[in-house]
Length: 209
Image (cartoon, rainbow, N blue to C red; front, top):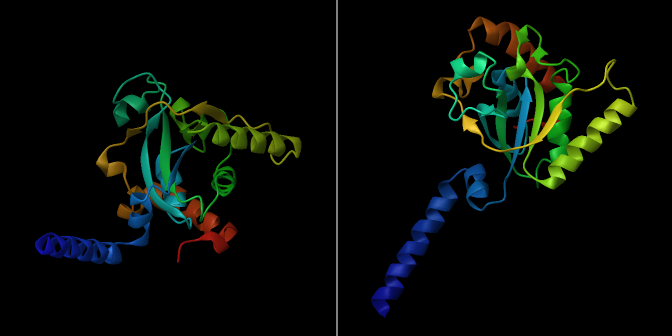
């Protein structure tokens, strides 16, 4: 009995030590306190780069969803024939950042009135889209879109797709953290960098330290 108590004491000690050394976001994710949001707003490199800077967001992954082809490749999605949209899967803590705030960033960092394109990126894979994971997310997204249209926040009606999430396919490894890993690439310098800088100015009080 003493031996068992001794073993348990060691296990608890190791667990406590590991928890103490782990980053806060990892602990929160392990405790199941996070939720998922899925947004498409043009090239997923841009969406990922923006949301990675938002306080309360613990993980952002580029990927594909909304199509009919299983396990699509980037080349296949770019053909426009799979039906998938380029999206970012955002893992966040709702106690730190609300879904409404995520939507606010989403709507202020792309043009939700352009059908199937953002800037020079054309095709259905670049469509403005929200893939909800709960009825609450669906209601919130539809309500905010209705309010934005009512207030004529944009010169044209919002065309953002609001659909249930079915399967999220994580994009190839070289797409993950693309802006961070390729800061000198021309697309990063001329498209992503200005978007991130604009985001940081508008949401300066909600950035990660």
